[in-house]
Image 1 (cartoon, helix red, strand yellow):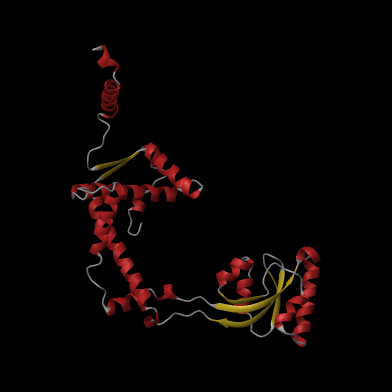
Image 2: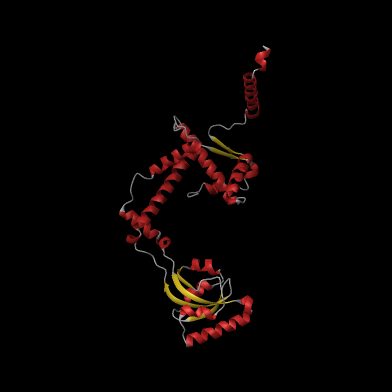
Length: 295
């Protein structure tokens, strides 16, 4: 008997029994019914910790709501997948079951190819989303405010503008009449957002798209200093014909159908469950907003 009591296997069995007893004491009466998804503060803290490791910051309340919403969606799919027996003979863990339910909902949206009329109607309804932004090709001459001061830099720019408009010099050489800069001297086919990304939001983009091509304009301010601007060419915003972007329109339509079908599919499953959430979390997590279509 003493030898049996000293045997490691006996210790392991005893430890396992103790853990079972402890789990029974701690969790008895605390487990939610099958149709209740309980969101606890501890769970949310774990979700936030994982999210913060990825994005190196704390989530906003809106992002936290989305994180919890995704967890609920995953839990609903997981439980429904188990009900359908999708976990049988499958060695891949929980997330694979969730993927199976997701794939099942996507299959529902792939039963019918949109007709030509449906594609055309979708294009007409969403024409603005296919608008090509305007583009501009331009050169500039830079004047450093830190070197000259604002007033002197402006005077230099105005004087040079009048001189080279009256007696033109090759545009590709004109930049040499200004100050050195980390910027390129010539930019081709830039959209307004491209210009703002390069020069800042001080108004240079608006100035470019309103300036007459073929002449020096300015000075205009950017995040770097002052500039004289020469517009070589400008293309207005436009919307391509359906035939030119039909493949993209079809893809967007199918994506919308799948998303809508997934929302309906999930809503039907979600109705089988009650969501319980800790009182301390309710002021931060807006599940009603998350449950709206497209969330």
